[in-house]
Picture (cartoon, rainbow, N blue to C red):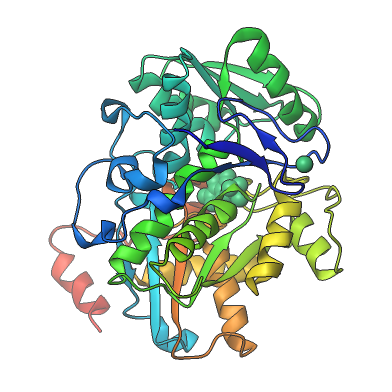
Length: 405
Ligand SMILES: Cc1ncc(COP(=O)(O)O)c(C=O)c1O
Ligand SMILES: [Zn+2]
């Protein structure tokens, strides 16, 4: 579409929309899609629509030729109102955006879906990513459906079970030794050399895919914005995408204010929060990161600086929480019937901290993004260890009697 482009998030420099796997050479900062928001019809949300999110919210993706056959039904996840834990936390209107319902059980599918649309429309037949976890699984599934040759770059120490989860799709998995940040930077060169579209953590189309989470939430809240949105922050792609979605709704005039964002990292890897708390503009590599389920273990997040800039201008907050707080939050989510992976529970842990400090008023409408399923991280099952009681059929009634409250 005419006038659409990529723009450096820092210096505002222009780049062509069809540039793939690039950052601004001057600033080494990510690029972001800019397009004509003027053409978004003011009554777009008056008609309920079906289909993939890039069709339901087509005017917000007007710069892209899309093909619904490549969709796996990503997005369209439930927004669930808290029943049981809102009283404990002291927030009357707490909602869970349940991203565990995605095709590969995490929000990553929204980003992968849009990267894939872009790759396909640009004529790529090879797709890849750099991830040992959720993004790898997501790109493997979508790449498979599109019949693309799929390449997953893994950290050298990626455990067997994570590799096994990719095997079913018949991808080409490569363990790469060396620093994660260096490998991230090399994907651009490799992509060019071998015509592979690398859908890495904060590539512009991935961020565009995450926008859809904001549009759905807005619709599910009767076309009103929540007051607060809390989410986990790793590379920063998710945070940037959801915030961009609400900012676009605001720019077009659908909402009169952008929700306040609460970005949460874990104490085991908090480069973005640490720089933010020190009042710095630039993150520094985090030494010896160690997190509960590793998906937030990015020592030098590529969108870290941009997340700091955006959270500051949004009036939001970045904070870090301990493993103990994360596991407590995971148990609270389970009380609501939601089985989240520890990384996802960080967002709720962040909300609890903010509520305790009086940073969130009790009558605020608060959304926590439950980013991925607990089944993605089986070791946690052992942590909560349940030992079943053994009994015989004859003794069953008696055993039940002892258990009935
Ligand atoms: C379950 C889960 N939640 C949150 C995140 C953080 O997202 P981002 O890296 O886009 O900041 C990730 C990233 O891998 C994830 O897998
Ligand atoms: Zn720049």
